[in-house]
Length: 120
Ligand SMILES: [Zn+2]
Image (cartoon, rainbow, N blue to C red; front, side, top):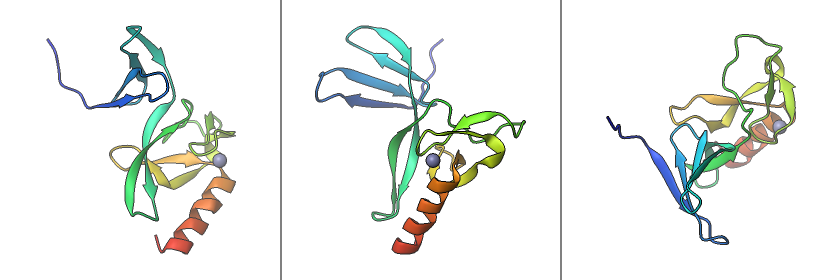
């Protein structure tokens, strides 16, 4: 049986390769080579200038939730490794259903500044 899934199809302008990014962002299908490879995940990033979401790539180790606060995660914005318990819930980088990824303190402060500068 087949099932329908959401996928993001892109063409790499440099290599002319077709990239198919599957819903959860964990798989990338390279049509030219016919191979799948692990990659960074895709997420929605709020553009506070345009007031809309844009697709962005985030590190593979980015996380929205861990059961253990000491679990290392990668900041969804800058990729720095931090314990999950020291992360802040991003106001900009979200899953398709709107859950915020963990970001580091510095990136969270930058989000606050952008928000203040643009009134959300
Ligand atoms: Zn960061």
